[in-house]
Length: 338
Image 1 (cartoon, one colour):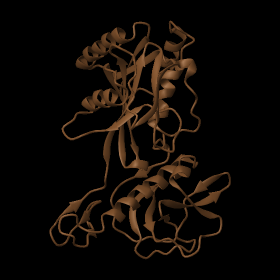
Image 2 (cartoon, rainbow, N blue to C red):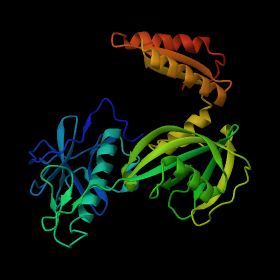
Image 3 (cartoon, helix red, strand yellow):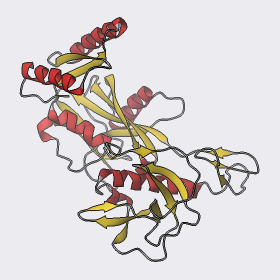
Protein backbone atom coordinates (compact mmCIF):
# COMPACT_ATOMS: atom_id res chain seq x y z
CA UNK A 1 0.00 0.00 0.00
CA UNK A 2 1.08 3.57 -0.53
CA UNK A 3 2.17 4.11 3.10
CA UNK A 4 4.32 0.95 3.15
CA UNK A 5 7.65 2.63 2.45
CA UNK A 6 10.04 0.72 4.76
CA UNK A 7 13.01 0.86 5.14
CA UNK A 8 12.43 4.56 4.41
CA UNK A 9 11.35 6.65 7.42
CA UNK A 10 8.41 9.06 7.45
CA UNK A 11 8.48 11.33 10.53
CA UNK A 12 5.36 13.38 11.32
CA UNK A 13 6.94 15.32 14.21
CA UNK A 14 5.72 18.92 14.18
CA UNK A 15 8.62 21.34 13.74
CA UNK A 16 8.89 25.11 13.42
CA UNK A 17 11.85 25.96 11.23
CA UNK A 18 13.20 27.37 8.00
CA UNK A 19 14.48 25.33 5.05
CA UNK A 20 17.96 25.28 3.58
CA UNK A 21 19.07 24.34 0.09
CA UNK A 22 19.19 20.57 0.65
CA UNK A 23 15.68 20.34 2.18
CA UNK A 24 12.74 19.02 0.15
CA UNK A 25 10.33 21.53 -1.41
CA UNK A 26 6.72 20.36 -1.77
CA UNK A 27 5.12 22.71 -4.28
CA UNK A 28 1.39 22.23 -4.90
CA UNK A 29 -0.56 24.15 -7.53
CA UNK A 30 -4.27 23.51 -8.15
CA UNK A 31 -4.04 20.02 -6.67
CA UNK A 32 -0.89 19.12 -8.64
CA UNK A 33 2.47 18.51 -6.98
CA UNK A 34 5.84 19.37 -8.48
CA UNK A 35 8.06 16.30 -9.00
CA UNK A 36 11.50 15.88 -10.54
CA UNK A 37 12.25 13.23 -13.15
CA UNK A 38 14.85 10.78 -11.83
CA UNK A 39 15.73 8.09 -14.38
CA UNK A 40 12.69 5.83 -14.75
CA UNK A 41 11.11 7.21 -11.57
CA UNK A 42 10.44 10.43 -9.71
CA UNK A 43 12.15 12.44 -6.98
CA UNK A 44 11.10 15.26 -4.69
CA UNK A 45 12.70 18.59 -5.67
CA UNK A 46 15.04 20.50 -3.35
CA UNK A 47 15.06 24.20 -2.53
CA UNK A 48 18.40 24.53 -4.28
CA UNK A 49 16.59 24.27 -7.63
CA UNK A 50 15.41 27.92 -7.64
CA UNK A 51 12.37 27.26 -5.44
CA UNK A 52 11.74 30.16 -3.03
CA UNK A 53 12.18 29.51 0.70
CA UNK A 54 9.98 32.41 1.83
CA UNK A 55 6.86 31.37 3.78
CA UNK A 56 7.83 27.67 3.59
CA UNK A 57 5.99 25.53 6.16
CA UNK A 58 7.52 22.37 7.65
CA UNK A 59 5.15 19.37 7.32
CA UNK A 60 7.22 16.21 7.89
CA UNK A 61 10.60 14.64 7.25
CA UNK A 62 11.58 11.77 4.97
CA UNK A 63 14.69 9.74 5.80
CA UNK A 64 15.82 12.56 8.08
CA UNK A 65 15.43 15.27 5.43
CA UNK A 66 13.02 18.06 6.33
CA UNK A 67 10.11 18.58 3.93
CA UNK A 68 8.31 21.92 3.54
CA UNK A 69 5.23 23.13 1.74
CA UNK A 70 6.71 25.83 -0.48
CA UNK A 71 5.61 28.58 -2.80
CA UNK A 72 5.43 27.46 -6.41
CA UNK A 73 8.36 28.78 -8.48
CA UNK A 74 7.78 31.28 -11.29
CA UNK A 75 9.30 28.81 -13.73
CA UNK A 76 9.23 25.02 -13.52
CA UNK A 77 12.78 23.72 -12.88
CA UNK A 78 14.40 21.73 -15.68
CA UNK A 79 13.35 18.08 -15.60
CA UNK A 80 10.40 18.75 -13.32
CA UNK A 81 6.65 18.80 -13.93
CA UNK A 82 3.39 19.03 -12.02
CA UNK A 83 1.69 15.65 -11.47
CA UNK A 84 -2.03 15.48 -10.73
CA UNK A 85 -3.64 13.41 -7.98
CA UNK A 86 -4.51 10.56 -10.33
CA UNK A 87 -0.95 10.43 -11.61
CA UNK A 88 0.47 10.18 -8.09
CA UNK A 89 -1.04 6.67 -7.81
CA UNK A 90 1.52 5.40 -10.34
CA UNK A 91 4.50 7.44 -9.11
CA UNK A 92 7.49 5.37 -8.02
CA UNK A 93 9.39 4.95 -5.79
CA UNK A 94 6.61 4.56 -3.23
CA UNK A 95 8.13 6.94 -0.67
CA UNK A 96 7.95 9.72 -3.26
CA UNK A 97 4.29 8.96 -3.98
CA UNK A 98 3.41 8.87 -0.27
CA UNK A 99 5.18 12.17 0.45
CA UNK A 100 3.59 13.78 -2.61
CA UNK A 101 -0.02 12.87 -1.80
CA UNK A 102 0.46 13.75 1.88
CA UNK A 103 1.72 17.16 0.78
CA UNK A 104 -1.37 17.61 -1.40
CA UNK A 105 -3.61 16.68 1.53
CA UNK A 106 -1.94 19.17 3.89
CA UNK A 107 -1.87 21.93 1.25
CA UNK A 108 -5.60 21.41 0.69
CA UNK A 109 -6.28 21.56 4.44
CA UNK A 110 -4.17 24.65 5.13
CA UNK A 111 -5.79 26.40 2.19
CA UNK A 112 -9.31 25.65 3.46
CA UNK A 113 -8.58 26.91 6.99
CA UNK A 114 -7.44 30.46 6.28
CA UNK A 115 -10.37 32.03 8.12
CA UNK A 116 -12.08 31.09 11.36
CA UNK A 117 -15.38 29.27 10.87
CA UNK A 118 -16.60 30.65 14.20
CA UNK A 119 -15.86 34.40 14.03
CA UNK A 120 -14.42 34.93 10.52
CA UNK A 121 -11.04 36.24 11.70
CA UNK A 122 -7.83 35.39 9.84
CA UNK A 123 -6.33 32.14 11.24
CA UNK A 124 -2.64 31.58 11.95
CA UNK A 125 -0.41 28.51 12.05
CA UNK A 126 0.01 27.09 15.56
CA UNK A 127 3.41 27.39 17.22
CA UNK A 128 3.03 24.15 19.20
CA UNK A 129 1.10 21.59 17.12
CA UNK A 130 -0.21 20.88 13.65
CA UNK A 131 -3.25 23.12 13.81
CA UNK A 132 -4.67 26.46 12.71
CA UNK A 133 -5.55 28.86 15.53
CA UNK A 134 -7.82 31.88 15.58
CA UNK A 135 -6.10 34.71 17.52
CA UNK A 136 -9.44 36.45 18.04
CA UNK A 137 -11.68 33.75 19.56
CA UNK A 138 -9.25 30.90 20.21
CA UNK A 139 -10.90 28.41 17.81
CA UNK A 140 -8.51 25.57 16.91
CA UNK A 141 -8.78 23.55 13.70
CA UNK A 142 -6.93 20.24 13.24
CA UNK A 143 -6.24 18.40 9.95
CA UNK A 144 -9.31 16.85 8.37
CA UNK A 145 -9.32 13.05 8.74
CA UNK A 146 -12.58 11.25 7.91
CA UNK A 147 -13.04 7.65 9.19
CA UNK A 148 -14.44 5.19 6.66
CA UNK A 149 -14.77 1.43 6.17
CA UNK A 150 -13.82 -0.89 3.33
CA UNK A 151 -15.87 -4.10 3.36
CA UNK A 152 -15.09 -7.41 1.65
CA UNK A 153 -18.26 -9.55 1.76
CA UNK A 154 -17.74 -13.23 0.97
CA UNK A 155 -20.25 -15.98 0.14
CA UNK A 156 -18.45 -19.30 0.01
CA UNK A 157 -15.64 -18.79 -2.48
CA UNK A 158 -17.31 -15.71 -4.00
CA UNK A 159 -16.61 -12.05 -3.30
CA UNK A 160 -19.10 -9.19 -3.64
CA UNK A 161 -17.67 -6.54 -5.97
CA UNK A 162 -19.24 -3.28 -7.09
CA UNK A 163 -18.73 -0.46 -9.58
CA UNK A 164 -19.32 3.20 -8.77
CA UNK A 165 -22.06 5.03 -10.65
CA UNK A 166 -20.67 8.56 -10.83
CA UNK A 167 -16.89 8.40 -10.39
CA UNK A 168 -14.00 8.39 -12.87
CA UNK A 169 -12.74 5.03 -11.57
CA UNK A 170 -14.54 2.32 -13.59
CA UNK A 171 -12.99 -0.83 -12.12
CA UNK A 172 -14.40 -3.14 -9.49
CA UNK A 173 -14.24 -2.07 -5.85
CA UNK A 174 -15.37 -3.23 -2.44
CA UNK A 175 -18.24 -1.65 -0.55
CA UNK A 176 -17.09 1.50 1.22
CA UNK A 177 -18.58 4.32 3.22
CA UNK A 178 -17.98 7.00 5.84
CA UNK A 179 -18.71 6.59 9.53
CA UNK A 180 -21.68 8.63 10.72
CA UNK A 181 -22.23 10.36 14.06
CA UNK A 182 -22.78 7.89 16.91
CA UNK A 183 -21.70 4.83 14.92
CA UNK A 184 -19.09 2.22 15.69
CA UNK A 185 -17.05 0.92 12.77
CA UNK A 186 -19.05 -2.32 12.94
CA UNK A 187 -22.32 -0.36 12.76
CA UNK A 188 -21.02 1.36 9.66
CA UNK A 189 -20.19 -1.97 8.00
CA UNK A 190 -23.73 -3.29 8.50
CA UNK A 191 -25.37 -0.03 7.42
CA UNK A 192 -23.25 0.56 4.31
CA UNK A 193 -23.64 -3.00 3.04
CA UNK A 194 -27.41 -2.87 3.51
CA UNK A 195 -27.71 0.60 1.95
CA UNK A 196 -25.58 -0.10 -1.10
CA UNK A 197 -26.43 -3.72 -1.99
CA UNK A 198 -29.32 -4.71 0.29
CA UNK A 199 -27.79 -7.76 2.00
CA UNK A 200 -27.03 -8.68 5.61
CA UNK A 201 -23.60 -9.73 6.87
CA UNK A 202 -22.14 -11.61 9.84
CA UNK A 203 -18.79 -12.66 11.33
CA UNK A 204 -17.08 -9.28 10.91
CA UNK A 205 -13.29 -9.50 11.11
CA UNK A 206 -11.01 -6.46 11.24
CA UNK A 207 -8.13 -6.66 8.74
CA UNK A 208 -6.05 -3.45 8.80
CA UNK A 209 -6.29 0.27 8.12
CA UNK A 210 -4.78 2.78 5.74
CA UNK A 211 -4.34 6.56 5.69
CA UNK A 212 -5.80 7.64 2.34
CA UNK A 213 -4.73 11.22 1.71
CA UNK A 214 -6.48 11.32 -1.67
CA UNK A 215 -9.81 11.87 0.14
CA UNK A 216 -8.65 12.96 3.64
CA UNK A 217 -9.71 9.53 4.88
CA UNK A 218 -8.60 6.88 7.36
CA UNK A 219 -9.78 3.60 5.83
CA UNK A 220 -10.51 0.57 8.01
CA UNK A 221 -10.83 -2.80 6.29
CA UNK A 222 -13.22 -5.56 7.35
CA UNK A 223 -13.93 -9.05 6.04
CA UNK A 224 -17.38 -10.48 6.67
CA UNK A 225 -19.71 -13.19 5.41
CA UNK A 226 -23.13 -13.10 3.80
CA UNK A 227 -25.94 -13.65 6.27
CA UNK A 228 -28.97 -14.97 4.39
CA UNK A 229 -30.29 -14.06 0.94
CA UNK A 230 -27.54 -13.29 -1.63
CA UNK A 231 -29.84 -11.33 -3.96
CA UNK A 232 -28.44 -7.84 -4.56
CA UNK A 233 -30.54 -4.67 -4.47
CA UNK A 234 -28.39 -1.79 -5.72
CA UNK A 235 -28.44 1.79 -4.56
CA UNK A 236 -28.27 3.29 -8.06
CA UNK A 237 -27.30 6.69 -6.70
CA UNK A 238 -24.01 5.16 -5.55
CA UNK A 239 -23.43 2.08 -7.72
CA UNK A 240 -24.01 0.93 -11.26
CA UNK A 241 -23.18 -2.74 -10.67
CA UNK A 242 -22.95 -5.29 -7.88
CA UNK A 243 -21.94 -8.89 -8.55
CA UNK A 244 -20.74 -12.05 -6.82
CA UNK A 245 -17.51 -13.24 -8.47
CA UNK A 246 -15.56 -16.42 -7.82
CA UNK A 247 -11.83 -16.22 -7.18
CA UNK A 248 -11.13 -17.19 -10.77
CA UNK A 249 -13.45 -14.46 -12.09
CA UNK A 250 -11.98 -11.60 -10.07
CA UNK A 251 -9.99 -9.32 -12.43
CA UNK A 252 -6.40 -8.47 -11.52
CA UNK A 253 -5.48 -4.96 -10.32
CA UNK A 254 -1.91 -4.11 -11.28
CA UNK A 255 0.18 -1.47 -9.49
CA UNK A 256 -2.61 -0.63 -7.07
CA UNK A 257 -1.61 1.05 -3.83
CA UNK A 258 -4.90 0.78 -1.97
CA UNK A 259 -6.27 -1.23 0.93
CA UNK A 260 -9.12 -2.30 -1.37
CA UNK A 261 -6.71 -3.93 -3.83
CA UNK A 262 -4.84 -5.79 -1.08
CA UNK A 263 -8.06 -7.15 0.41
CA UNK A 264 -9.32 -8.31 -2.99
CA UNK A 265 -5.98 -9.97 -3.68
CA UNK A 266 -6.16 -11.97 -0.45
CA UNK A 267 -9.57 -13.37 -1.40
CA UNK A 268 -8.44 -13.96 -4.97
CA UNK A 269 -5.39 -15.91 -3.77
CA UNK A 270 -7.38 -18.28 -1.57
CA UNK A 271 -5.11 -17.93 1.44
CA UNK A 272 -5.47 -20.90 3.77
CA UNK A 273 -2.47 -20.86 6.12
CA UNK A 274 -2.41 -18.60 9.19
CA UNK A 275 0.48 -17.94 11.56
CA UNK A 276 -0.40 -16.51 15.00
CA UNK A 277 2.45 -14.88 16.93
CA UNK A 278 2.31 -14.44 20.72
CA UNK A 279 4.78 -13.45 23.48
CA UNK A 280 6.69 -16.39 24.94
CA UNK A 281 6.09 -17.66 28.48
CA UNK A 282 2.96 -15.66 29.26
CA UNK A 283 0.13 -17.92 30.41
CA UNK A 284 -2.67 -15.41 29.65
CA UNK A 285 -1.42 -15.09 26.09
CA UNK A 286 -1.38 -18.86 25.64
CA UNK A 287 -4.98 -18.99 26.85
CA UNK A 288 -5.93 -16.19 24.45
CA UNK A 289 -4.03 -17.96 21.70
CA UNK A 290 -6.03 -21.14 22.17
CA UNK A 291 -9.21 -19.09 22.10
CA UNK A 292 -8.12 -17.50 18.82
CA UNK A 293 -7.38 -20.93 17.37
CA UNK A 294 -10.82 -22.20 18.34
CA UNK A 295 -12.54 -19.23 16.74
CA UNK A 296 -10.48 -19.48 13.55
CA UNK A 297 -11.23 -23.18 13.22
CA UNK A 298 -14.94 -22.49 13.59
CA UNK A 299 -14.79 -19.87 10.85
CA UNK A 300 -12.38 -21.81 8.60
CA UNK A 301 -12.54 -25.57 9.26
CA UNK A 302 -9.94 -26.37 6.59
CA UNK A 303 -7.37 -23.72 7.43
CA UNK A 304 -3.85 -24.63 8.59
CA UNK A 305 -2.89 -22.92 11.85
CA UNK A 306 0.45 -22.45 13.58
CA UNK A 307 1.41 -20.58 16.76
CA UNK A 308 4.82 -18.91 16.98
CA UNK A 309 6.10 -17.90 20.42
CA UNK A 310 8.55 -15.02 20.28
CA UNK A 311 10.81 -13.45 22.89
CA UNK A 312 13.36 -10.68 23.02
CA UNK A 313 16.29 -13.03 22.43
CA UNK A 314 14.78 -14.84 19.44
CA UNK A 315 16.35 -14.12 16.08
CA UNK A 316 14.37 -13.38 12.95
CA UNK A 317 15.99 -16.42 11.31
CA UNK A 318 14.71 -18.67 14.10
CA UNK A 319 11.13 -17.51 13.63
CA UNK A 320 11.35 -17.74 9.84
CA UNK A 321 12.68 -21.30 10.07
CA UNK A 322 9.70 -22.29 12.17
CA UNK A 323 7.33 -20.75 9.65
CA UNK A 324 9.11 -22.55 6.79
CA UNK A 325 8.76 -25.84 8.65
CA UNK A 326 5.07 -25.14 9.08
CA UNK A 327 4.72 -24.54 5.35
CA UNK A 328 6.34 -27.85 4.46
CA UNK A 329 3.95 -29.65 6.80
CA UNK A 330 0.83 -27.75 5.70
CA UNK A 331 -2.18 -29.91 4.95
CA UNK A 332 -2.81 -28.04 1.70
CA UNK A 333 0.59 -27.40 0.07
CA UNK A 334 -0.99 -25.74 -2.95
CA UNK A 335 -2.27 -22.89 -0.81
CA UNK A 336 -0.38 -19.68 -0.18
CA UNK A 337 0.69 -18.46 3.25
CA UNK A 338 -1.14 -15.63 4.99
